[in-house]
Length: 378
Image 1 (cartoon, rainbow, N blue to C red):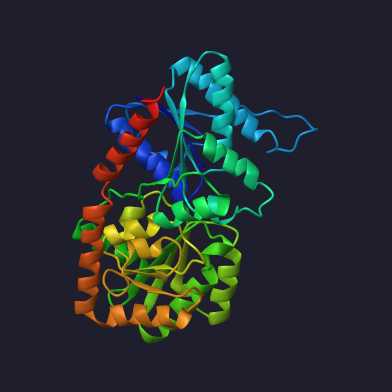
Image 2 (cartoon, one colour):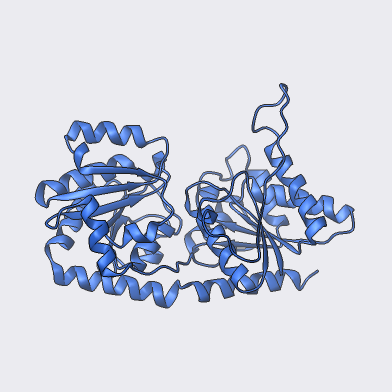
């Protein structure tokens, strides 16, 4: 198949899934064309066969703001690439603006004798932020209803979309996937020694550092844990709440125990040295970051919100607590770090769940089936 993938290039779950899916599809022989304002962060590195990148045009004109024409430029690039490369299907990752952009491009192409199909995947905030009361809900609903197939990365998002937007059909549920393994132990020790001493634990958090991720809770939980067990905190990613996190860390006088590492592409290497993964978000769809941690046998302690209960069974393969319950999350981290037998049990079950339910081969085949179903109605 010849597939166009439209996604955000920045650090976050939707762009990460779109890129990893595209890479897997390319290895299976499909021609994958990424359309994004920058090369997606997980596409940076050794290039592989069957992958192509296209940048939308830019227009510099004083009348228009920098981003006011961006959706139209995306649509025009889709039309252009579809004609040149004979694209069969566009996969839009994140509803706004990409589903709307894809629908517009499809209509333009139809008027020119081309017939493409649209698959839109909902990742979370594209549904939770925009409800029936949103000033843009009508555009969002129209774009999803005009997509040939709509998928969601968990049941929570699928049902929220149908309820909040009044969709005629429930989106098809296809969970996120991972395909990473732990680094060899010799490399673990060498890398680990850069960040922590042998008697210290490593706690990790990765996100886009937006308010919804509750970075202040991450810092406070770490402070509570560090008082009981000497630890280091690795913060991966970047975003608007980073300065807030730094100020709070300075207030707690633990700034020297935290590594602000910015955006990192080799997340599996860093996960290989982590002991705990923290995710106390306000809401989550189906966190790819948490899934990656579980696949590396790193127990996740996070919020009982959104799609997280579909991923983690509390007390069995991780721990969940109510949003904002810093005390309970701190206690669960300490419990895990002080009880090696419990830690190993949780870590083993977490990894096994990912291997059995969220492995790349299983999920990529499901997306291929979605594409085939969409194209069958051409």
